[in-house]
Length: 320
Length: 265
Ligand SMILES: Nc1ncnc2c1ncn2[C@@H]1O[C@H](COP(=O)(O)OP(=O)(O)O)[C@@H](O)[C@H]1O
Ligand SMILES: [Mg+2]
Image (cartoon, rainbow over all chains, first blue to last red):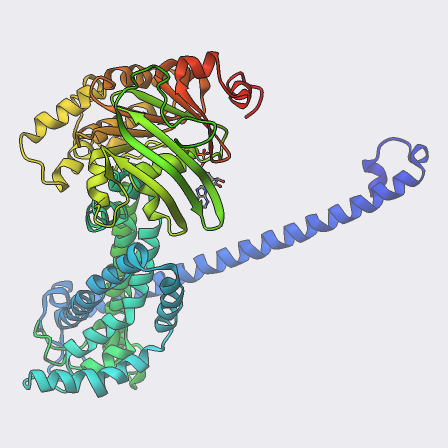
């Protein structure tokens, strides 16, 4: 096959031709490898697109089925969530309020502490301290969430009940606190990266105007790192919304339309786990509630991600 | 009185200009690496002093030591004495923030804050609790930096929308707003086009009326055009220091001659 490519007479080249032919072969090989990789990667991309599409289609279909039986209004505005008990009621607000309690509570823990950690690490800590603390943060981020749930039940809740005796055994506050602790390392690490990506020339410019390190941090470095910090917040919130195990363990499984963190609540994800683990027959209305709740969860996280993208894009335009 | 070959004072005339900054036997090293080697020099007040020399010879290091910007580099150590109007810049009880209020700086690459043009200029005075009419102060600083006419209708826009040359003049305005006595400039035109460079050079002549300027430049023509005094550094050593005319036309040291005539570096 090389002959046709080497259009000139092969005899003139003697040995050289042999070399060339060998080169051709290897280059053809690498083409094959390249094409194979192309197909492989395309396959991977295709599979992930297809699965995402499949998830959305199934979600939409089952949710549609659910709304054939329950009016959208009742679902979105109802304040009682008792799909498994009589009288049945399908208002998602209790699950939403439960989720909101966990998200807000955990953010109150994770965001300020996480940003403070990051500021310390990036602006004030020596390299030696950083080299120890950064890996520790990553290890903390890798602890299985059920451990945090257990920690909430056996440590955080008793402490809370000691301080505030009216606290229920299962309560949102305890869950929110451990979810906050759980996402804290991620927030700290991402914010640290964001702060460190602020060019040092900005810091120098600020110092040269007679600023103290506090002023430089608060009014130059933090604002310049805002988009990265915001991204960290969004990830933290997404994780808090999605967190299931620790929340189910610590906050219980009582759909409760309340904003009192000392009561037992149920979040959207813990409801999904509860029903999935139970013996609800597929095709029933109770089964379809799973998909309706999942659709709400999906839309919420999607909206959050879109918002994050929007903010980041806008900010980057200004910055460059 | 100082180095064996080079006088610390640039003035060869009988009455040298009064000095505002003085370095005596200053050595600065990064860890083991000696970047500035036993430099002694007097910087005269309300003049432009240029520091020239091949890349890596310690110009920036020396310049940054005047307002203690090397404090932020962990490995730096410095010996010798450095004074501003006779006050020790490195004394234990000297506040580096106060030093930087008196001795401002403009950097090689324009580094405006990602804030509005107005806030870039007002930021320094604001954090330092300056009183008075901020609008007036901002306008005056922008006028001094020859930027006002170009930005007066858009001071609330982001500083990052300005061109490189405008950004550098904004950085000069930002430094001027602090009303420093000395402005250190580290190759302020190296990132700029010739037109912007010419504008900044014109600006330097204006500023000389009120400020002492120390400018590092790798551009010999620029040094010859704008400065009153020129210091030539090589490998951290002050090879020659004198009136610019003399350094460029009748250098005392033949290394200087080779450098300014472009035979090396
Ligand atoms: N932050 C730093 N850490 C270690 N060495 C440095 C640092 N900055 C400069 N140096 C070294 O100090 C010497 C002088 O550098 P510099 O003052 O930047 O020279 P110039 O401004 O004349 O080009 C060079 O050898 C350079 O490698
Ligand atoms: Mg330099």
